[in-house]
Length: 525
Image (cartoon, rainbow, N blue to C red; front, side, top):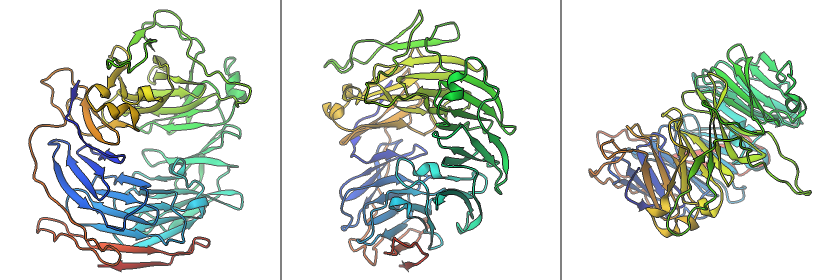
């Protein structure tokens, strides 16, 4: 493995989606670095009145803009070049937004109000705003389940709820006005998503209800009403009598849909027929064989002072996963609570709620269990590489695992553990850490790791001759200064002839949060 030099970080430090830049939010500025050179490309000064805890610091989908949100204001800045600066002001009497995110494009910002009062869509390109009442999901942990963008046309599908009824609305990609809406045949829908090809809109019922997944056409007609895997087989008693749908996962190629519920069985449907193709059954006892590798973490505990990393041994006999033991005061948990396809749609990773330290890897083409990875701690993060097939990043909960990152692929001898404490400050194990794959295209995959003070990148390269995402060349420094008085005006660096200059936009949101309306004031400088 190869490690970059340690760089300045903060509690908010993230790589861009394309893996070319790193943005670090500091108390008075945003520092943007180039991954290739590791040099600072530009520094964006923050407004002096930007105070309070930061609720959101995120990249736009195309990696060209950055969003910073606090309780009473939201700012959007150009990250690479240009001088765009958009501001949204939230009255002090209004309640702090519960979630803020970019839309499908860089000029759209979505703001969810508390208690599902409204969803506000800001469009900096057209200087317009749209308010939609009663979004069903509005917290940071659940808001993304309630909306989806159609890949082919960017139409917005939104799940709302009022008077005890679910409603689905389809919104225009240009204006976000409603083009059509309907009441789905659900009691308590728990999410919706467009299929990757944009052909179907998938809606699934709450796990408290009977298993049900609805496949709608774009105009609201039901194409398939899936009510569970029928007929049930003798080994599917748990599938028949367990809770309803918990997870719906779509393969990137749009050919398959994985549906999991409160049982140990996951059903795979083929599209566009929506006919069940296979059932993946998680066994209570796992038997190793030629096509199945079982890797167990050794009993030696990590971070003993000598920077020793966990090691994994290959099981040669039957193994029983570590199932969760509950006391009399805890509610029983069961079923699959995570399922995700890799970028090639050939592998599916799953995790059971009652065995959170075990990861199951399935080969979809043969419907066989390919690998079982067993940890001593609960696995809290599973992330497939966005471009490299069959490459998985994992993290575990607990302070002793704070500086550890695990990577696995079918050809590796078990999960490879990377202990960043051996290459960074000792504080790595005592602060909140973050790790994710680096989206940059390179010969060897790499991931990004940070804590509250420093960050670095790690390449999985096996030899010195492999090309890394970073190099030693330097890059020119380009500093952007946004004026101190950001209340009604902004002082921006003049754009050079080669830059695509944009105006600074200030948006004041209406103070009335009890009765959403379309009253917005726009001041363009």
